[in-house]
Length: 254
Ligand SMILES: Cc1cc2nc3c(=O)[nH]c(=O)nc-3n(C[C@H](O)[C@H](O)[C@H](O)COP(=O)(O)OP(=O)(O)OC[C@H]3O[C@@H](n4cnc5c(N)ncnc54)[C@H](O)[C@@H]3O)c2cc1C
Image 1 (cartoon, protein in one colour):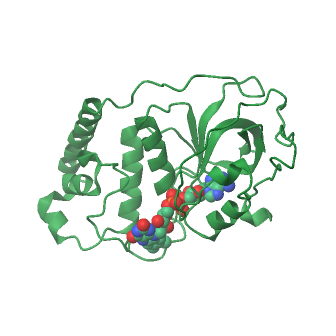
Image 2 (cartoon, rainbow, N blue to C red):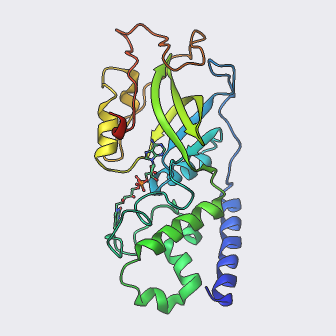
Image 3 (cartoon, rainbow, N blue to C red):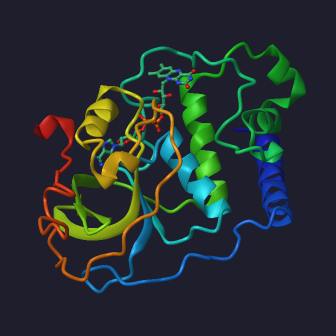
C-alpha cells in the first residue's frame, strides 16, 4: 500500500471513531452482571465464529450496550471464513454496493475503505470486490472497531443447563467451560449450520437457536439460571421431559 493510501486509511479510521462517538458507541453496559452456575461472571452472549456474520453480530450487540460477550473462532487470526482459505472464486458474487458489516455507518462501508486507498475513480472502475480484498476489508472493520475476537478457540459442545447454555471450549489444548445466556452460532450459512440447528429440538428452550438461513421469531422470556448446575455441562437443571440436555458437537465429530 502506498504511503498516500496509508494516510487516507488512517484518516478514515479517525473519521470512523468520530462517527461512532456521535452515535454514542459503545453505550453503557445495561445488562445486570450475575454469576453463572460455576460462580464466575455469566456471559451475556457467546458468539461462535468470527467470520463476516459473527463479527457483525458482535458489533451489533456492542452497539446495543451488550458488553459481556466473547467472540471465538477456531481459525487462526485472519483465516476466518472462506475468503483466504477454501474459496476459489476470485471475486464475491454480491455487487460491490451492497453494505452489511458497516451496520449503516457510512465511514465503515466497503466503498469508504476502497476509496480511501484507490480514490473515487478506482471505485467507479471496480466491477466486483476480490475475495482477498473483502477479507482485508473485514479485518479492517474488526481492527477499527477493536472487536474482541479470540482466535484458535473452538467450540466443542453446547449443552442447555437451567435456562443457560454451557459451552465447552478448547484453546491451545486447554479446555474451558463457559456459561452464557445466549449463544450465536455464526458457523456459515452451510450444511454445518443447518445440521447444528437441527440438533436443537423445537420443543426445548433451544428453539431460540437460529441458523443464518432461518427467520427469527420473537424471543420468549427465559427461566432463571439454576444454582444446581455445577461447572460441568452435562448436569441438566430441568427434568429431561421439560428440557432434554442435547449436546451440540461439530459436524466432523458426529
Ligand atoms: C468465493 C466465494 C464468494 C462468495 N460470495 C459471496 C457474496 O458475494 N455474498 C455473500 O453474501 N456470500 C458470499 N459467499 C458466501 C460466504 O461464504 C458467506 O456469505 C459468508 O462467509 C458467511 O459468513 P459467516 O460468518 O456466516 O460464515 P464464515 O465466514 O464461513 O465464518 C464461519 C466461522 O466459523 C468458524 N467455526 C466453525 N466451527 C467452529 C467451531 N466449532 N468453533 C469455533 N469456530 C468455528 C470458522 O472457522 C469460520 O471462521 C461467498 C463464498 C465464496 C466461497
